[in-house]
Length: 144
Image (spheres, rainbow, N blue to C red):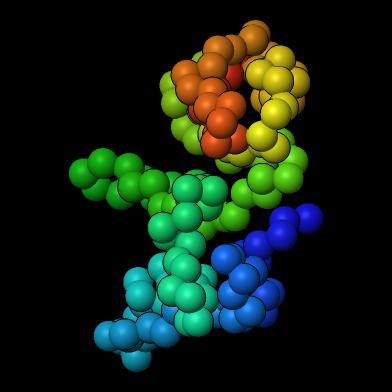
């Protein structure tokens, strides 16, 4: 479990902060026209005491939630998901017809081989980025 709070109601704990994580207040709501409005769907978590925002945290990655095939091009809508840096955790993203991007976090000190065992595709793959100091990776997994 992470020492920092990421979910609503958890204690922030960043630099000794004892504030509680909350959803940001929404401004310019248009739910009365078409609910839910864009502002409500995209409200992020934050700590009102220290000013931390999930949008500014490099460990928080947006995950694909839905794809709309409207004109003129497909629209990919993302939803926020907090990755747990105490374990090997990732989100899957679209890449090509036979590959996918797995981008995520791992505990600092974990060898690349151990991370690759978890995220490898059916036909292997390769690291596009592996930052051992920050605990971040981006892997292209070859699938069928």
